[in-house]
Amino acid sequence: MPAVPTSLTPEPPHRPNQGPNPGPVQGPPWLVVEDLALRYGRKTIVEQLSFSLPQGAIACLLGPSGCGKTSVLRALAGFEPITAGRVSLDGRTLSEPGRVVPPEQRRIGMVFQDYALFPHLTVAQNVRFGLRGHPDADRRVAEMLDTVGLGHAARRYPHELSGGQQQRVALARALAPQPAVLLLDEPFSNLDVALREHLANEVRDILKATQTTAVLVTHDQHEAFAIADVVGVLADGRLQQWDTAYALYHRPANRRVAEFVGQGAFVHARVLDAHHLHLEVDGVSDAQSDLATDERMPFAPGTRVDVLLRPDDIVHDDASPLQARVVHKAFKGAEFLYTLALSNGTEVLSMVPSHHDHAIGEAIGIRLDMNHVVAFAHTPA
Image (cartoon, rainbow, N blue to C red; front, side, top):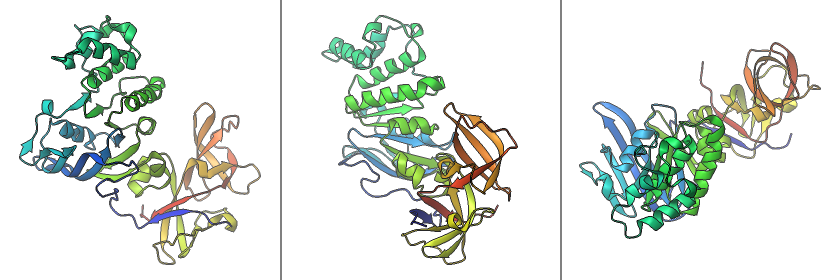
């Protein structure tokens, strides 16, 4: 069998990229967060959080509800004091224990989850609000409304606009003073699903056109992937990984990231030697069970590991002797996402073209088609 690239790790508790400019985005550090910790009383919200961004880069902190991502955003804005660490912008310290530069002196803009538009002000007046004292406010307002595609709506009021248009007004207002960094707190959560990805792409285009450095927080990985250059997975109070969306999906740093990003299932395997492992799946032929890699595995022969199988690793194949029973199906339009039970009870996922409409309980043929293997030290159930 040809060599299969692998990513095998003994499962560190967290493994974010470190250094003065960690992650895949390049350039001199502009926004720098070093060993940030946030605690409310005895409760630790976030600890040892470190990342940096060059000018013009877009980052996203991605994580489940309650993981502390909005608290981090508020700390960057200056609304929350930090317990430890440091936040700096263009070499200037903004936050450290005992010292907080006020929000209005940070040159940091913010787009709130509920947009926070003034209902009694027109669209133009809302955008002008952040330009008090600006010598050329009228020109700047018109410029920003044209940038977000709402020049025609300058005299309307927020209640006369759709949710997507209100979001763009909030974005124009935040961008009008030309902030050094823009923060976006779950900016698409009030929109319907069909509009979110479209608007995320629009927002990315606007941020790139204005060369704005931005940090977004969300629990929705599709939004994160659509808008960000680099994504940090925040869970259990720590930054688990800081990387591109592609790397998070295909090379997760630990099991926590692998479970949160994308979809998949773990199957047991046994390490044969430094470059081979054997999947413990009944009915899979030796040709498919024995996986090889050019990379040296950090496990001793005989060690049990858990291999991550993504839906694209499981291919529908009527000619395959390996059978799986359909236990759940979700229609995705062009595809079905099937949950399939193997003979030993192990469940895996498979994305199958939707013209293959199989019934719950039906047995179908599948085969493994793996271009990359991700595995971690076995975790007993």
